Image (tube, helix red, strand yellow):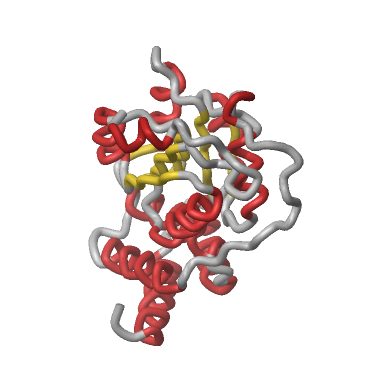
Length: 238
């Protein structure tokens, strides 16, 4: 743990900033989803760092220990479940370990890997975000009661969504088969739902359905790629 994080842990939480004193490491490859969590941490008083892959997360954890670890299940270089299990089994365990995904079906594997809780995307309710973390925080780090009950919905800037679409376009420009399609399907599904892009979500769902049926998804991949490109073109330069 570095000096700045050590000092931040001494700060007592307040009713308005219930996560004051908490340090969060978010392991998430989506810029849009990361921005949502960053805004929630900012409003809650928590410090946040981000890793966009398992490799980067391991580099972070070799330097300092956060008090909260939030891990996306689908990452570009492997499964977040492996990181959750390793963090849960560590002799010096992180206080709160949460798994997150746009696919509610992975909640059980997340919990089986040793996570304290699961957050389904999109993450928009500030109160729900705070409550999910505070449910697993020790009594001495709890904010004073009663807390204000006014909720706030957090909506990241859509520029972050454009960044995610540009990433997908680059991935699809390569060898769009096998593991690549698995990653694109998982990544874009969560991002589209978070951005409330219903047409994109439908296109991703159709691609997944065709692949699960064992059929060649050439036309679905092409349609998805055209949809991504059209959104990028409509938004202009990023």
